Length: 573
Image (tube, rainbow, N blue to C red; front, side, top):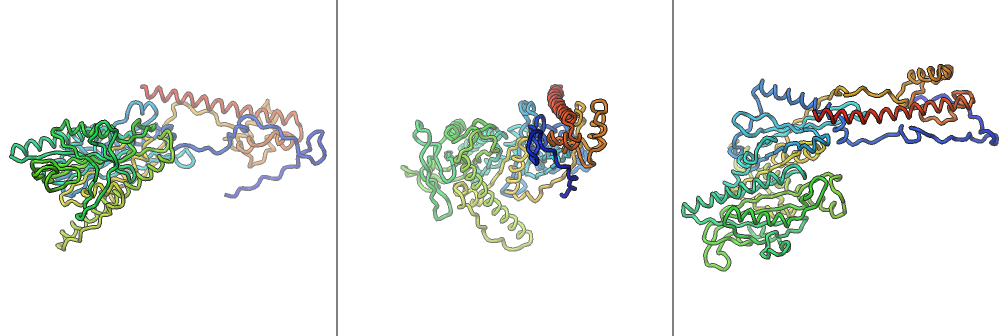
């Protein structure tokens, strides 16, 4: 941007006592100018959200009211089946929003996640919206981007663990008892409630599975349950259920591919369990040996993927770790593989500022985690695309397409889960947990974009932008600082200063001189340019301006403290 250059000023007089032509003596700057008050500042968008919480929460509340009215008026609330797995398809996406904690509200957080109204006779919805609160570059105008995601089922903060299990996980366990392979992936930012939800699902799944085992035994079928638990950190696979209980964990597990396209975990123990309590005890033992790293968001943030495989076999013996069919080791009796439940707890992610120490190892871990999750997404998207092509061919009466190529060898995680992608009777569920706080908006968006892309629902994502009106201030703003004065305000201040003593200087000010310009001028500018060489008069004008600047800074700081106290009092009410 081009601006008109100010008129050249008269050459300043030499400093008293100095040689002719010497530059004038520069006086040290003081007050606001010396402290860099006129320099550009950087602002954190998360802090700006908290500072403008009143404006953003009002805009979000208005959006929710309008959305609710539209749903009720049109009777077109996003439909969510009471049984998402009954609609067909092998891959489903589930999202759960946790409640906002009191400690977060005390730190200025507010709710930026909205779950669509639930249809009648349904415990969940099918749509979830994230309200991204942002500020324009001028730091004055505000707006919200309302990003809506579709899911097989979305659970609000009022949903119980039993509701989540019944809709998302119970059909997977039933498929295992019937001879299939079911896999449930858990995604979520550190502190989003992922561990809380997964623990509840594990507890209810163990009871559900052994209830099916007891029913099978009553029918004369001998079903046996075994569990293996491995940890994946980069390319390393480690057994978490070693035979030696005194050790802190087993050794490394080797991956071996057989001719049938399956991957065997050589060196991983498969422990036989006879009750739900034994199964949960084995899972807890493995969790205690899993690698964690303390962060600012969570004292035990998982820095690896955990894969729990619960295998159901039929016969008079229990399968070992490297067996799928055939006789059990050390016996002449046979045990036939029947079904498998795979629970995958993906590594936790956090912002860079959430970690107390970011060493090279931590950065390397983050890169390996991202690479493995990318490979997982590519595998699921390949199968989802093939399913869509197969459905389209069936609808058109054409021959089904060839079996798709699934790139599961791209990472260690997908190699371990190869059977989940290739089994003809496989089901895959993706469970995402999200935090409602405004500080976690970007992580919530990243999680939802990832899981919806895995299921092919990203094409249904919608985004709407709305402008945000500033909320009425709790206190009147302080007077404008001198650096914010326009030309007329500067002239008025100078003309009324000291009973009109500087009225002549005010009338002679250049028309393009504004407050931010004069605040940057050195002391000799006031003496030589504005006051015609009168040192006493120029010194007084300079001192009065900087006294005004310091007074404005004090008033602004006082106003900030008063506003903080007023916000705290408003939250208390």
